[in-house]
Each structure stands twice: as C-alpha cells, then as structure tokens.
Length: 429
Image (cartoon, rainbow, N blue to C red):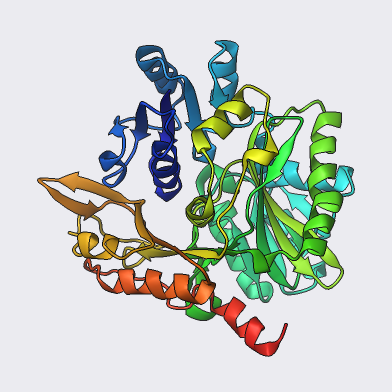
C-alpha cells in the first residue's frame, strides 16, 4: 500500500510514524512534511490547504489511500474532490467540516439536537453589537471567533475591559483574519477538560483512548492560549460510567444529528468536553485528530493503523481491531521563544539523537526543517517529546528527561504537563 499524508506538523509525524509500522505499507509521501518526517517518508513541498495542488499530486503519485491531517484542506473541500474521483481518503466532507470551520454552525448544531453544551448569549457580526451584548452577560464570559484561528480564537474574558479588548483585536484590528469576522458569546463552564476523539466510517464508530490537552503557554495554565503545549493519555481519565455517558449523551446524538441533517461524516471527530458537575458538555468539535493529542494517542496504539484507516475509507470500520497499550503516554511540546506571539526561526536544534536513545521515547517533529545536514526550527511549536510507560508518572519522567537533553535558542516548554492528574490522585479524587 502506498499512502499520502497531507500536513506537516506533529500530528502528521505521528501518523507517518505509526503508518510506517504497518506490514501493508510500501511507501509514504507527506506534503509538505517537515525535518523529522523526512526520515520516515518522502516529503513534497506543497501547501496542504491547496486543493488543486493536492489533486495534481495525487494524480501524479496515485496513492492507494490519502490521510488528511490538518483542518484547512477539509474545510476547503478536499475530500469531496477526492471522492468524486473515487480516490480512497480519510476525512469528513466540506459540509461536515463546518463543525470546526464555523463555531456558530457548530453551536447551532448542538442546540438543534439538544446535545449538552454551554448556554449561548448570541452571535455577532459587528463589534458594536458585541460591545452592547457585553453589558448583559455574566463574567467571566467565553468569546469565540467563528472561523479557523489556529487554536487562538477562543478567549476567556474575566471582565468587561478584557472582553472589549479581545473583540476589538479580533473584529476591528482583524488580528485573526477572516476567522474573526463573526463571534459568539457563551457562558463559562467549570470542570476538567477531556479530549474524546472517535474514528467513524459514517455508520460505525470507535472511540480512541482519552487524552487531556494543555492549551495555555505557561505552567499552571497561565498566559495566552496556544495550539497545545502538551497532552497525556491514561485510562484513568475515563472511568467506564463516564465513558458510557459520553457515548450515549454526546457521541451517538452527534452522529444521529449529522445523519438527520443529511451530513455524512467519515474520519476523525474530536469532541472537546468539559466535565461539569452536571455532566459532560461539549466545548468544541474538531474535524480531525488533535495536536498534540494525536501524539499521545498513537503512542498507545497497538494495531495496524494503515489497515484500520483503509477500512474507514472503504466504509467498513471494525472497532474490534483497535487495541491499545496499557499504561500511559505523554507529549511535551517544545516551542520557539515568544510563541504564540512573534518568534524567530532557523535556530539549530541540538540533542535529538541523545533524546531518542531513551527507551520509550519518540521525538515527533512539528516546526522543523533540514538545512545542510542540521535540523533547524521552522515554526512556533517545534518538537513533541512523546513517551509511553506503565504509569503516567513514569511516562512523564521519560519525556522530561528527553526534553532536558535537547536545546535550541529560546526553547520553551511547560514543566507541569500531567501534573493536574497527579494532584487529583494525591487528593483522592
């Protein structure tokens, strides 16, 4: 089997790494790929969000299966074009991808199908309307930009001044581009977050192991939101009763709602949840694997990913094929100094070999490139130090040991990934 993976971040490196382990796989291309993926697949320089370029590439190389990593090609309708040509592809349609591409579409879908979520105060097309609405909400309030904003379009505003400042930045100064033309306001939910991701062929679905992401850039959940600073996975995140509640109250009504709306959904569906005192509620949908959740999830995968994804593309998912390693996994993200704001690229990365020699560790590349035999930084999130072990404590120790062996100018990472789980365990929760 020859496979094309679209994208060039840590999620795509995790996919390539796991697909390469399949005995069915003869060749993997990745477009555009990165400095680490180049060791596992043939990288092809291309904008993954360019549908025409992806079609031209697929016509040239004729992959047996295409796996779409990031959201932009999905929102741009890539899978529709591929399916019109009867090409096997994993990923939802353009219509289905609106669950991520439009926060307003997603919220209206949740309300229409009575799926538990935060109360919405309203949607707004102009800053003046939004400013007026801020006079009648309860603070803190959640402000969401409607479109794609690379994980930076959601803001928890503690008071009116902070809320007004964010609205001005998004809607008047256009700091988030077209993604911020419309916004919605909703109540703040309290509880622990959980990433519940499923794989579906449109009829059947299989849940992946649970994960928890860390969005804020600094320890103790301080600083601005990012695309994700780290994630961990352990079965202790999801007791059996909670899993059953999520499946019956959220997952199945979501899939039934999509069917009722005439929106077939195939591929990964990320359901971001808040575990409130009154039960799990949906914070957001993503129409693909999370990043860095994918790294933690795939580190625990104990099945042939290429075979399972081929089954999904063919509409014959068999959930019994998905087996998982016991224990825990973690991904600690190393970022460029200044991220998620302005940062420099082109910094030489040292210590990669020493880090990868640690048993149980895989360094997955995100924003890297190769130049004259060296690996250089080429983005905000640079590396995902991924480790798996029998316990979360052991996996964290491995990941942080590996992180300490690497260096590039301005390197930053959170030191408290997974700490919340250990604190809750110590408190007996």
